Image 1: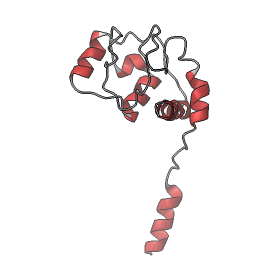
Image 2: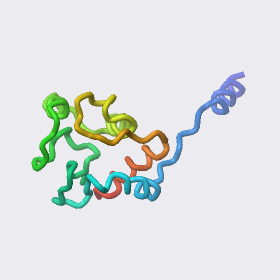
Image 3: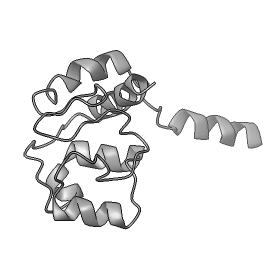
Length: 122
């Protein structure tokens, strides 16, 4: 009985999609007009080198919106959940952001970009 219940639970479980950093690099090309991953290289948007795990609004050479500065002042960090929400819909995730990109609709692409951001920070 226990085995049958376990088997049914496993069959009903939703598989977690594997993250593909290589695809994340391809998708990140959409971001490169405004953001750089190279240490110390600035563009229109803040530098994203080692963004994963970094405090929000912590790039010293960028003039963040009040919304992001406030969030950073509260101790928020760019963890997977916050990055994912922001990449999906920046204006809904952080109302008042200056980010003009509408967001990514594909959850797989979002997970892949997060994997790519982590990989490039190493």
